[in-house]
Length: 271
Image (cartoon, rainbow, N blue to C red; front, side):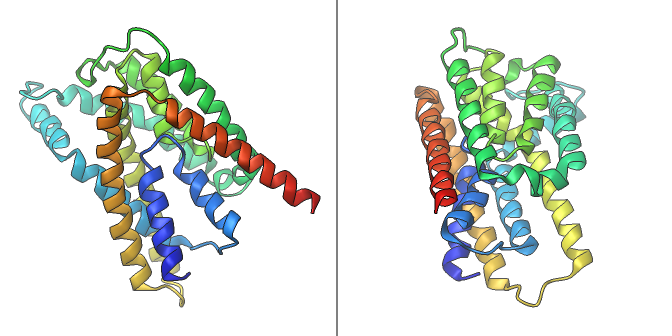
């Protein structure tokens, strides 16, 4: 992997992990389109560790407030409390179970470009419907266990490349009448344990397998730093954007990207 490839893939990971356009799809499609080789497990660990740091850093005050509230018996001076921490824990279970039982399919069967295109466009349709709903007025502090379970079940679908963890969980949040900004905020907090779990598992796998001879510390460092910086920027951007804008631009992007993938695949199959 060249330094340019390392930087591009880190930028793609950092931006698309938190925008509702599917990071997995883009990390599959970029090498597919340019004919790059698989960067391997070492680089996957760097990218996930970087985006994990971005999420933890951006929501550090919220996590500390939830922990403090839990220690105080549920009392909180913040917009989040210990109850929300419990909801996040329960809501993480479906996504974790999907990752555990379907990991092999996620790495093979589900990576078909056509299937990615279908998921990009299908979730775009759901996102469009959810975004047009009236009554999107609830804040993060109003999230209930039922909300968490529904959004958590939606997160499990993100095992399919093209779905987008952010896209499907924000959409589910909108169907539960959360504001766009609140749906995104809860989505990002809910994603943190999943990203952390993926980073830990990949780290253990890497430890057991050992570093490959071609592994470059420079590539790892670039992946970690660039994905962390761009991930943090993507979170800040989307939360501000959704305070005053809709998800329309992301719906259009997903539909366009899905159509382009189908067109490229048809063109390649006819050559």
